[in-house]
Image 1: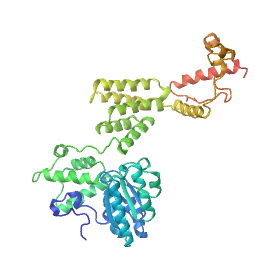
Image 2 (image 1 turned 180 degrees about the horizontal axis):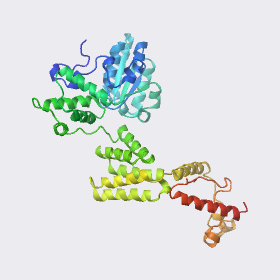
Image 3 (image 1 turned 180 degrees about the vertical axis):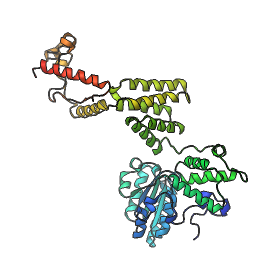
Image 4 (image 1 turned 45 degrees about the vertical axis):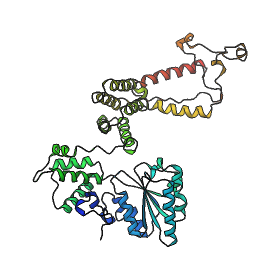
Length: 435
């Protein structure tokens, strides 16, 4: 079989290794068995002889472009490709017109749109008519979450297929294929080979590019250890875009590890984010959020610790200030947990929206004018500090809705003490209101 993806005009030995090892059939695709295996979604589509429009969602180097080309070849659709980075409205019109001409001649077009999320809303809408009338089968590729980046109308007409990062076994398979193609082993010891796979961060293209750098750099008969590998490749930065899913996935993992009282996992994700160059201000803000959302008043010092960590980082900078974040993360993870205030706040927001037009009871309103005094503002108000136990037991909610209960603290941490106070005041309120 001829190479469907060969770089035009370049002999094999001068083509990048990743290009030379591109799969020529779906069976050769690695790392996406849930799509290309015997019962995979794409396998079933091909077996049925009919393709629908799709969105390929996944990180770089997982085979999205290759898969689109293989689908076109397997179904005899004309393959056309554009990138949202370099294309505008005029380019789309030309592509659609060419597809209509081919349709008139009896051949459908598979249009592959790389980085489709970069098209604005109106540009995305322009695909709808040609998708609906069958002029094109759209295959869009995106590294960003389609739920947030693509129009609902477009998503309703296309099936989202998720591409997974390569795991260690899949990347190892790619390295073995490369060794077989070049007929020579990768000059790395066992530990360095594992390190190279880790550097690739689930990216198949990256692991082959790194391997190619190693083959170029290693002298005859030399076997590199981990230190030598890092020296040769200058350590590839983790795939982590602060505006994309990697950013949100890791902060979610950090937050949930803190909430789950696992300081070791929390430290691991903190270090991954710092290693990837995360904005320290973002981390400081998120730690403060964890303190108020998941620890709350179970340990009021959590908020103090997190604000202090942010200030310490501002004072020390990197890398010394990172230890302040580590202290805060461990403190949060090991603190008693409570989301009682978080839940109370959300419930109060709903109640406020539903009853936003109701006036407070007149007895707790000030009467700065004679007219307001005449209308009864402030009548019957009892100054709590003048009451026994500094507690009057008055009602403060609008009369129409009566007393509400939003805050229900658990019997943990400092909120155990708060619970005692609330029970005491509730008892006094009943006594003083005849309840």
